[in-house]
Length: 169
Image: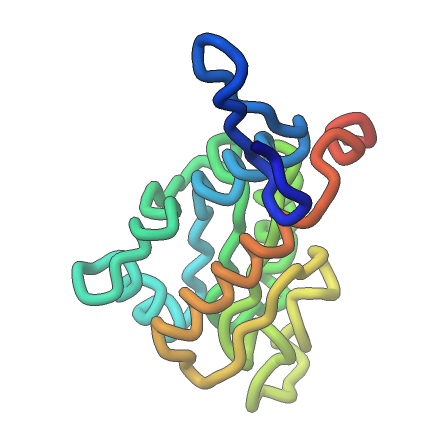
């Protein structure tokens, strides 16, 4: 029985136990439960990013425990910390090497807006070089804040049309 509120449904009247779904719902369910982060630990926020992988916070509950250090195997870039102008081209290059669809989380005040650094060497927000999907505030933000950002990103991915994004990529 399929209701208006659910994306996946089970029809008991059909022989063999058939599950009926929309392609968008199935693809987005797979994407939301298997996000592989590309950690860009550039400063002190990287310590909090590392803590998320530990047993206390357990990012594995959200299907994002496979930290990939190869951009071709990752689909979520987590920029954690201060981005300098010297590091900006490398961050952009790694983003460009990631396969589509890809998403970005800016973790911390420095990644989001340059933080307390108003100098000639600091990029005033990573959104000037890559499109950011979710911002995490704090200096440094708690690991729970990163998990909340991951859940928000999963909500965005769950709602977007997967097929249209595949065709446009």
